[in-house]
Structures are given as C-alpha cells and as structure tokens.
Length: 120
Image (cartoon, rainbow, N blue to C red):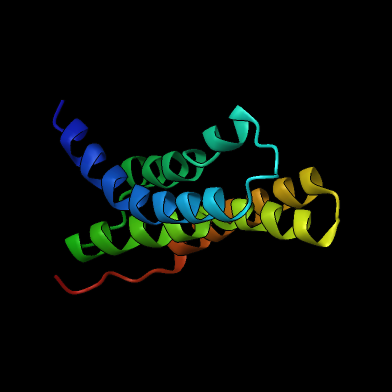
C-alpha cells in the first residue's frame, strides 16, 4: 500500500517529457496514422524501470528517484520520434517503431544498471 504514492509520483515525473513530445508530434504530423497500442507501449518502459527498482533495489538515493524517471520518459519518446521521422522519409513505419521500442527498453535497462547513486 505504501508503494502506490511513490509509483504515482514517479509516473508523474516520467509522463512530463512523454506528454510534451506527444503534443508536439500530434501538432506537427497529423497525417500519420497512430494505433492505440503504440500509445500503450509508452508506459511499458516505465513499468520496466519501476519493476527493476522494486525487485532489485541497489541502494540508490532520492536523487535517482527524481532524475531516472524523467530520463526514462525522454528515452521512451524514441519510438514516437522514430515513427514520425520514418513517415517523413518514406520508410516502413512499423519496423522503425518496434526497433526504436526495443532500443528504448535496452537503454532503460542501461540507465538502471549504470546510473550511480546520486547525491540527495
């Protein structure tokens, strides 16, 4: 029960860059067809990072709890930017979206593993 407020706080930090990028992309590229599951995949990296924090706590500080979700939110925007770029260049959009999604998940794993404990 005590994890719920923490997860809501972390998700609010995560969703800031995601919301900004989604708003900019929605305004600039209205001709691209978006599917509902592409927006659902925006939260998968957050749950990946949150699951790693809950299951394997490495003694990181509150500085990490503020910085890492924001950084993960920036990384999670990669598939949206990849699909928008692919659509403008005439490439196959689904392949670029899924490739960018896999790369984003790997980068989030790297953020969790290689980010040292930050000062509070």
